[in-house]
Length: 117
Image (tube, rainbow, N blue to C red):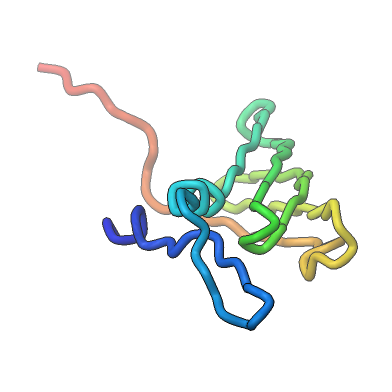
C-alpha cells in the first residue's frame, strides 16, 4: 500500500526513433494525477426520505471519468430502497445514463438505552 505513493514512472515521452524516455521531474506530477476526487451531499427528511447528489473526477491520463450523480431514497421501518442516476459529462463514459437501485436493511437496534440504578 505504501509503495503506491511513489511507484509512478513519470510521464513517458516517445522519441522519433521509437525509444521511450521518462520526462525529468514528472514522477510527482504523475502521482498527483492518480488522485481521484469525489464528494456528495445527502439530506434526510424525518429519517424517512433522502435526496442526494455527488460529483466524481478522474484525471484524463488515468481514465477520464467525470460525472454527477443524483438520487433519492426512502426508508420504512428496517427496509429501504435507493435509486440514483449517473449523468456522465462525456458520451464515451461506459457508465453514462446509468440508473442504480439499492435495497437496504437495517440490522440490530440503533437506539441507545440508558442504564438506571
